[in-house]
Length: 367
Ligand SMILES: *Cc1c(COP(=O)(O)O)cnc(C)c1O
Image (cartoon, rainbow, N blue to C red; front, side, top):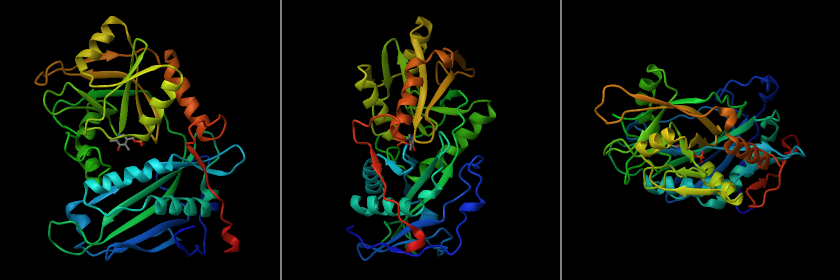
């Protein structure tokens, strides 16, 4: 191990208080967190400590100007009951890509990976074993300098904490295409997992909910016709025998699930196109009977089927139209794709791409 990470175990584990058959989403946190502080040009004081509050000055730059970003990933148990991580190095790279866009310091990839492995190694008992449950892992970085001035902070905190999560309830989604708000534009911060992106999405999403929809289907800012993502997921369509997903053009978050699904589809010899796709093309395919499937893709849901898409033919139209997609049961490709990915992640199926990384268990009691 290259880095020296100190370990301060909790004196009272909360593990016994959790009902793993009924986990409220995102409200239960594991015993420990990894913390590192950046100042004077270096990451310092690497430590695993009990999960708990952090204090900060009201002048903390993050609170005012939002210099903050995060990652989201999951840990699983394999068939031997040992902890594993899925493509952690991709998350390390994306964390640094987000950080670069937000003028934040690089976190060495090997430090990210070592911290992740040691933390999961300590709290491995928090990984649920029920099917489709997992330990959600939340790495994030934010500015900590205390100064009222718009400029990059000279100090930062990087934290990883984890939360057991139950199965994602995949009710098929009703989407409404955006015709007023935009999530991202090329050259903006939509490609980064910048905290502010999610604040900007709250009002559009709330209005979509008020209109009876589950999620926004984000579109471009020129004529609101070019499809980008849905909610906080990448979006895929199956038209005829071809899988189509918007190309990453600076306004699309480069999802690791997106990348993984593209690999798995191409492995099976299924044609995947990463290209611009418009609402017009989608509607035309629907009327021609060739639009077979639409789904969101992201770490939380893996694949979330879409069963209705509402859209405005022209951006100034007062009324939307709705297309209904084929029944969920008919969607052979996405159903088997989801199963395949879930089986690779939990060791039920071979992992030809080397995506699954074993985590060494650390016996907390003997430390
Ligand atoms: C995180 C995220 C995704 C999905 O990325 P994964 O790496 O697959 O979890 C897609 N879109 C947005 C906007 C996101 O924030």
